[in-house]
Length: 171
Image 1 (cartoon, rainbow, N blue to C red):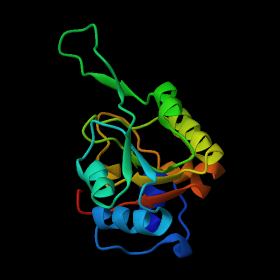
Image 2 (cartoon, rainbow, N blue to C red):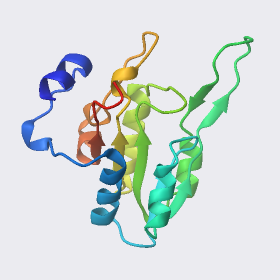
Image 3 (cartoon, rainbow, N blue to C red):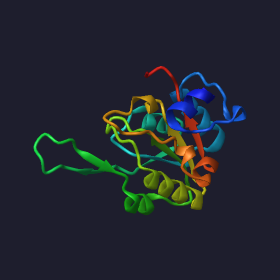
């Protein structure tokens, strides 16, 4: 795992950072159980994998929606482009927002987030004491010359405010 992360993603992982879980969805549930309480708010960015919002809701947490901004392309047949909506995120976050579930790279939008976007998210969450769960299960599936950046690798803030999940099961 350490060698794989370094070779593929340029991320130097320390052995003491690693722990095994029975699956990413179960891992998200474990994080919510440990770091939040019923009534706390969990930020989710649709369109996204449905357990990201079903799991918090089923465990008595309130889901806060921060939909991705969707941009149609001018060229027929060109892919739709998405971006994080930081202005909306700021408007929906309050002191009861405790966790932000990040899909990195994003599925189904296929986005490999830029370093700047991930750093901005880390800064936003650090200032508000929000824990980021970064689901990186699709990290080895970046296509068409895109490069995955592990969330925790983009800054000290990102490393200190996050828990990342990965698995070889997708690749």
